[in-house]
Length: 117
Length: 113
Image 1: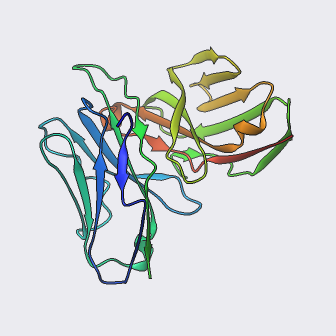
Image 2: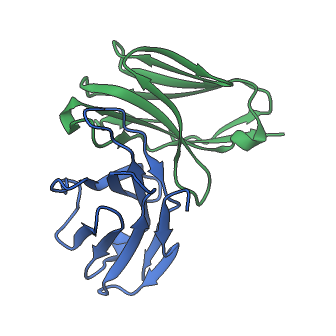
């Protein structure tokens, strides 16, 4: 596809269960981001992948959150033992970062609406 | 004090009005400033991108950055009902290696026909 694809678009789960959210970035984009958007809140940075470098995990709110990016493309965000406060829209974005360039233009997917009951 | 402050609105205007959206920020290291538009149930899409201070115009949209006041603005001329959306300011700088954006909470804009 031409854009960033996220699945599922909606996920309802019970407190304590684990969930996996998937992101397919734009082909050729080397940078991939996960953000969280809660009701009435701005976008909160979670994690950033750039090529083969170690990811920047500084935004992950707890050790229940983890993310992987396989083959430099698809990424999965995993939330273990979900809590009600994890309910939010999880947005994935990708960008084409040329070497030495600081020109970061992010392209976002439509997000996964996570509801923890 | 949050790093980026943005009035959540909603801001309601009639079609054809000039709209002014604003953000203030506290981190003087920010150098790149962006405006994203987000329609309901969609991801944000990049509208305007500005480096450092100055103005940038693109069609009906003008972005202004005043680094001395730590204040950025987005102006929309001849607003249309299709402009109804949430507008998010975002910025990045040397602190984060330019790699992550700090967003405002967004301002909801409603343009009535």
